[in-house]
Image (cartoon, rainbow, N blue to C red; front, side, top):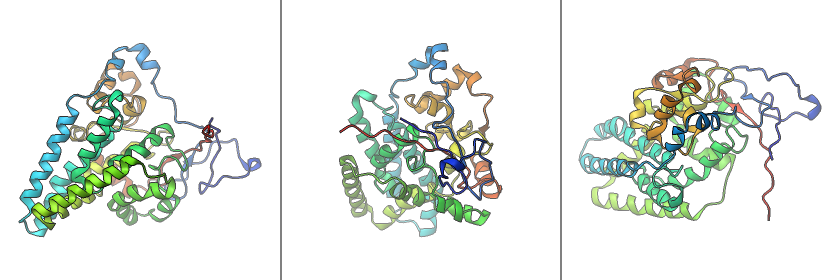
Length: 346
């Protein structure tokens, strides 16, 4: 059961008698989140499109190439580990940003795709979990199992206060509100993205998270023993730099930050989709999360009248530029809503 509650100002819940029935006023990216009295995101075409276009249902099948793409990316990073072991530090960080950052960020998005059981299907969920842990190996830190645990809530409770950990905290919105600070926020995005769930919605550790950590520690120890410190630094730098101020990281901002009032989800139709498992097709993804990334462009092709007229991005670099220099944009430029959850039966 979900009960809508209107949020005003600093994400505080006012007494019932103080709640205005007028729509909340958008005050830009420096003061507060735009809050809504609706208890869920605007309904997408999840029902209308399959009814009108039965071919959409045929796209809801596993991607047989995903596991091989992941294998290729992991092997590419292992080869890079061997190649950089003798490089000067400046060149190591150069390649970590330009090459390793792209590969490791792409692997995090492969993990995103796999979290929807798109590699082997819902009937083989364990295979998907282990493939995600394998894709995690070059990232250097255990990530895959925790991502799966929290990403379910992002789809189920989009923008949910205390539930969707993709929404920045009040402290982030208050602190990172000038161009220089927003630039710093983008640089530190990997740390906020990792630590925010522990502060906003901590959950008990699962068995898969323990296994993920043990496998990752074993892989790190093996790489360090074979190729030394520089190879491990390369992998960690690839993750930190690639998920920080990097062109691909524009998707973090492009997906749900409110560039236009009233629109909380946007798609990106640009060339970087080729190396990011089509994560840019984000409206399509939220409408049909069981469709693998390789098939998301077909959703728009089959049903263009549902997507072509919506606000969209064509450059993640421009998204980052606008986010930093537009006063109306910042960590607070998000839609936030309250979900009252029914208690789980004993």
